[in-house]
Length: 330
Image (cartoon, rainbow, N blue to C red; front, top):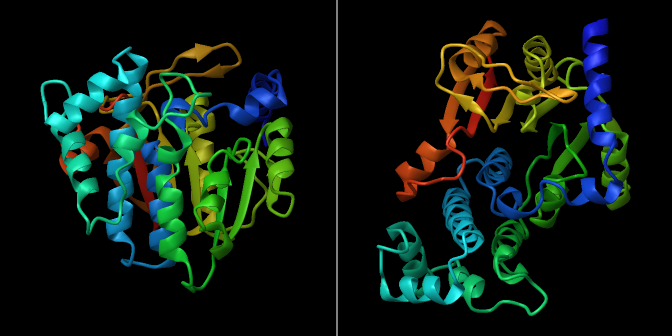
C-alpha cells in the first residue's frame, strides 16, 4: 500500500481508537441508527435472506422495511417532544394531520387477525418499560422482526454463502444478523481498521472470523467471497482512497457488493470536506457509478428516501441522501 493510503489508514484508526471500548460498542446501534429499524441495515438483511432463499421471503422483507420506516418516524416524533398519548390517539382515530397515512395503515394492518406482524405501534407507544426514557422505543417493539425472522427461517436449509463485511465496527450489524437466525447459514468474516472495534466484536462472538484490516487492502484473495457489504464508510475517505476502496470490494467478491452510503447526492462532482483526521464528503452518485462500471460491474442505485416514498408514501425520511448501490460482477 502506498504511503498516502497508509497514512490515511493510520489517521482513521486513531480517530476510532481514541474512544473507549464501551463507547464503540454502543455507537451506531441506537436511535435511528439502530440496525433493527435502520432501513439500510434492514436492506442488508433482506439481501442476505434473498441470497439464501431466492424469492421466498419477499413478503417478510417488505414488511420489515415498512416496520423500519414506521419506527423511524415514531422515534423522530418522540425526539421532537410529541407525547406518546398524542401519537397513539392520532393513530387510533386515523388523524392523518398528525400521523402520516403509512403509519395509520401499518397500525390497521397489525390489527387484522390474518396479519403475521403484531401491532408493534401500540407496543411502542403504550407498553413502555419504566426504565426507559420517554423518547425511546421499548425492546418488545424493537425486537418484533427478530422473532418473525427466527420463525421464517426455522427448519429451512440452503447452501451456505460466504460474505465479508468491511468496517464491521463492534459487530454492529452482525449482532443482529446473528439474532435474526441468518448467521448460521453464512460463512461470515468481518474486518475493521480499529483494533478496539475488533476486540469488542470478538468478545461478543469469539468463534467468528473478525480481524483488523483496511478497506483499501484487506488481504483477501481475488473473488474469495460470494458477497460483501459496507455501511457508511466511503464518505469518510479521501477521493483517492475511496476509489481504491471501490476497487478492493469489487476485487474480493464473486457475485455482489452491497454498498451503503449516508451522504451521496445527484451532483456532478464529489464535494470534499476534510474534518479532524478524516473526511465527511458528499459523494456524486453518478461519479461513483461510473467508477464501478469501469471495474466491469453493473450497478443498481437505490435512493432510500425515494424507495420508502414509493413503497409506503413516507415523504419525510430523515436522511434524504442515503443511497445503496447493489454492485454485480460482470
